[in-house]
Length: 124
Image 1 (cartoon, rainbow, N blue to C red):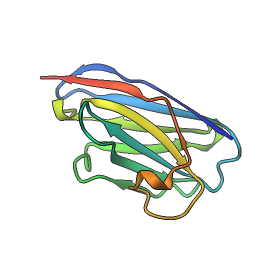
Image 2 (cartoon, one colour):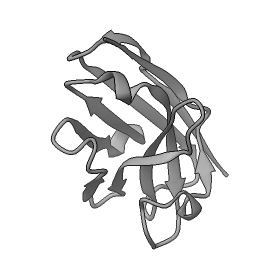
Image 3 (cartoon, helix red, strand yellow):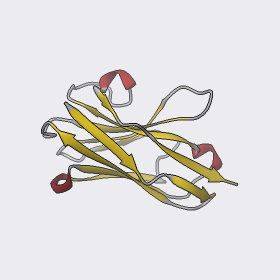
Image 4 (cartoon, one colour):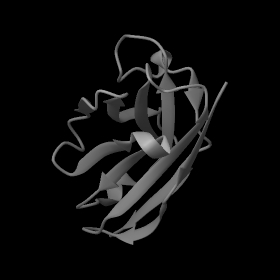
């Protein structure tokens, strides 16, 4: 079993930055892909970013490319999402997810485990 705990959300003005963290515990992460997704009120959950573990290859949605950066600290079993130049449309609950399967890292169906989510609100 894998447990994921997100932190770092909050309220920020447009143009500001936040860094989300996702601490993982439980089974070894040597073969996991870690993903970030978000869900705004009334909308479907959408892909934001993914990072392979432990290789560190990263993938981003077009809407956040150049503004968001995903990274990981293997020693701490933690992945991060650095979010810069935030926009009001980035407002959502952000979820961390882990997958032990190979496939499309942008698909929610790939992921076995999910965190509880952390709220990010960007004011204009």
